[in-house]
Amino acid sequence: MEVAKAETPTPSTFFEAATKKRKATEELDADHDARLRWKFAKELRLCDAWYMKRLNGSDVSKSRKKLAVSKTWVVEQVLTFFAASAAARVERGESERVIVHDCEQGSLHVLYLKKLKTGRFVFVGRWKDDFVIRRNLKKGDDIGLCWHGDESMFSFTAFYRN
Image (cartoon, rainbow, N blue to C red; front, side):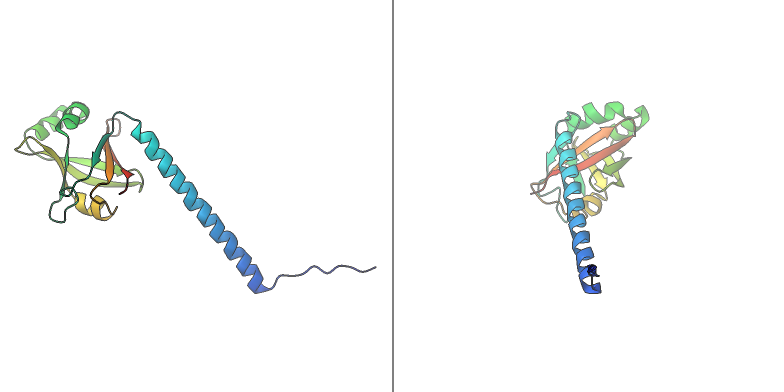
């Protein structure tokens, strides 16, 4: 009676198999994360409270450090939910510190909401550094902003990357 000997893998074949398995797992994780981000963005698009904007050249310009937003959106969807004193400061043209949560990156940033003398509303501060450069935003990208009164912060997402 012969006993079959089990083949012991050589170190090189063992590590090759482990490396292939690890790479396959990493690819699955990346695909899963991408699908979750896509699903999240798709659901957000359906929400009426989101302000969507297609970035223009001045929003991502090297020389300008502000993001212009719709006056109607700020007045109807944001200032009505601000504390009365904060809303009054913004209406007077003073800047109000706000927290912005980057939904895809999971990071928090500080910007300032301000009303210009022309009556337009803008976000100023580190818009260019924290969003344009870090997220590599370009002209034609669609972004979304939403005010969450419960958390007293904005959420930011890039819906479409050009």
